[in-house]
Image (cartoon, rainbow, N blue to C red; front, top):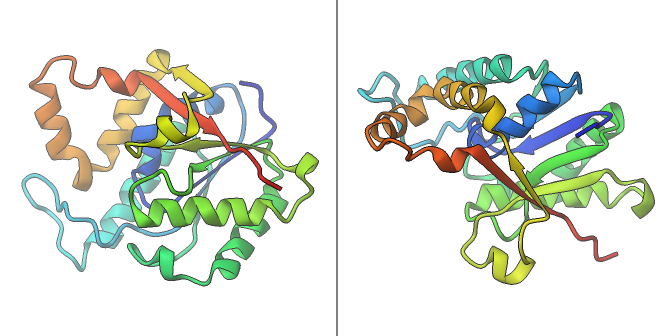
Length: 217
């Protein structure tokens, strides 16, 4: 768990909350600096709150505020908003996106990078984000690259990638994780209300799984 600096790169506000916020919280509590580079403001999200309190025009502003609150809860003091448009990351210039990520890597010098596993993360923005991170890191000699822990949840991920390399029990920070999820109120309020009625329906949140990216160069 001892890292020099952790860089998290995801495309949407709340991507950090469900999959890796326990890990982030543990690193932050250990005094490790965490940088979160979020590509979009999730302005094309379908949810508007339960009952609705957002609309298509106000949603980007609301989601930015929610993200900032989630970062405060998790102990992330360095949030980078890269300004891409939700649901279009796959169409962005690959080299330009890699340039932005590479600049953050060069500045922060992380020993660990957390992102989505390209091709195994279901949403096109997820896959494009992970691919851009890998493209950026390939600019460094292999022996100088940080460890890359990837989130994957496609149906075939275990068949193709094997069992996850890291399975982390984050029960000790589950309250912090749940608070971070709730901070993304516009997107998660309905889910959390439904889950609270099912007793231990949120038990799966106590475990976080990662695949270490396997370099092919």
